Structures are given as structure tokens and as C-alpha cells.
Image 1 (tube, rainbow, N blue to C red):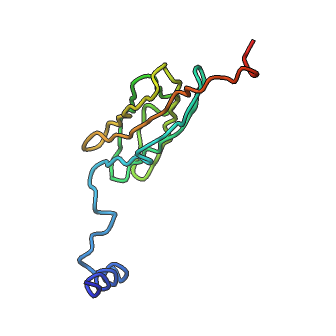
Image 2 (cartoon, rainbow, N blue to C red):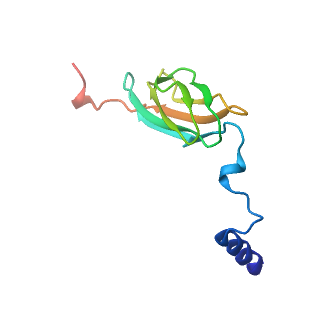
Image 3 (cartoon, rainbow, N blue to C red):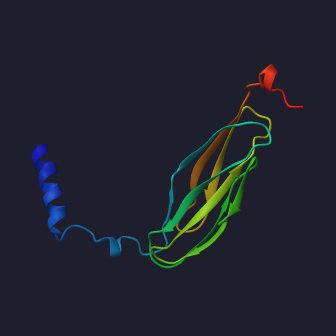
Length: 136
């Protein structure tokens, strides 16, 4: 088994003719998002947090698409993209707890051969203010 792994690594390192080059791998737009999971952490009621996902076209041609996410998350910027080969764009997402203890939703990215998704989640803090810090 070790010999097979060593030989495969050697072939890749030397550019063995049987290895497909990245330039020819994708002949149409191909979408990649990173990261595929975002955790906004625990927030108090009416607090907000933002985070970002990178959308990239690793194929050829132009990737045209949109990013959407259900409430209580919302897209602040980068919802629509038109990316040429090897271009990337940041999609900024905001989260404001809606009263549920935990919120988990799926961000959908269209374009390319198929839809791609990322999971976003956040929590509402259930801790109460200590009596000596009560707001007036």
C-alpha cells in the first residue's frame, strides 16, 4: 500500500502524462464556496453579527448566480455575482436572533452546473442579566 501511495505522489510531482491538468479539468463554470459552515455564535436579543463566505469560479466561462438565505439571516452584500474564470467574491451575511433558541438555515448559491449550499447557524442567549446589572 505504501508503494502505491509513493508512486502516485511521484507521478503527480513529476507531472506524469496521465494526470489531467487543472486548465482542462472544467470546461464550464464551476462554483466553489468556502467555508461551507458558518457559526455566528450566541447573541442576545436584538444583537447582530456578520460573517462572510467566499464564492469562486474555478471553471472556465462566466459564472452568473445569486446567493439566498431565509430569515433570520440576511445577505448584506454580494448576493449577485458574475465571475470570470478564477475570480472570487465575498458574500456577507448578517444574523439577528428571532426569538428561537437556535437558528440554522441553508445559504443557496446558484450558477454553474448545480446549486451549492452552505449552512449558517446562530443561537439566542438565554442568560438573564444579574439583578445588580439590570438595565433601567
